[in-house]
Image 1: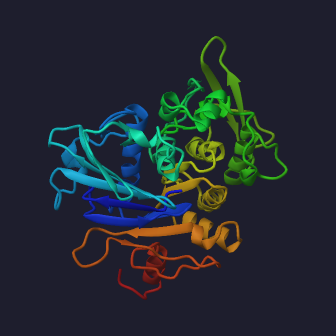
Image 2: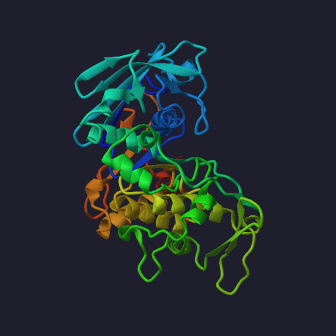
Image 3: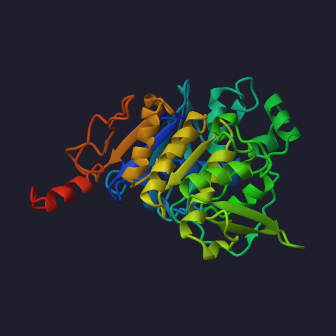
Length: 408
């Protein structure tokens, strides 16, 4: 599991050191850096997936497009270099990237593993020195960081609209690590064809993943009791906690690599095309499918899980994500919803997630005097020790205004 993230001269950050937990909530004002944290991780993921042996960081690819060097380097303090560092339980990996103004990718200038630096040009695989994968250390926690980054799932706030028909993707994929290397881990990986679990940044592959993995057993720590443990039935049951009466139906399209998705929100109603049902259903389904199909130790990044959800559903989403984190899947969430936060707090109070396995970070605009990020702490009862100005306090401010106790 990743335990800390450091960003140097990346976008709005001069220096950011951020503790990470099994469940990490990124909250705060607009344009304060929350998305930038996720984007830094996605850049590493994108490079590993698309250019496994590259010595350049891919700023633009199928997952994310961030432009050129000036678009990602801090405009006030940086010039043409920025850095990312990640800690796990026992190791740290860091990278320094360099580029010219017109570059749409950036050179890996330095890679550091613990106290050892490697200056490029140097043979890299998944942004780490190749020798780590060919030595006895390859299955160590060091390369586990690379595997976690390479396999992460990223779900943006701009998810795909409902479709009449959903394309089926090739379900059998092997990671770049699996393609290149031989080890006991790789042998097992190749003998058991891996069904892709990434639902895509816009959720565009969610229905395909659900179709191919529909009969796979969900990990015991994530199943709802009284429901068959298959992905299809568990996803359906989880969706019911968000949308009472929810059911779904998948049907292959004859002579086409596609399926139709039928949805309903009443046990007595008919199945309808997604376009004729509530928009929130197809916006939440990718999150549920990704969370239930992820393997233990994988990393999921989610922007605004509350999109198109009723407040009660938002709170349920917070509790669901807490359950997923407790089950060993690391989750980073960017959210503007106090209901999602309160769902997590309730999960902590109900002992579904230990308080020290949830981290909350509140981002504020850059200031020369005040810290850019504050980190309120949860206790075992779900209480928060500090409520800085702007931290989910708008309801109280509005209530005070209507009561005549405040001017604004």
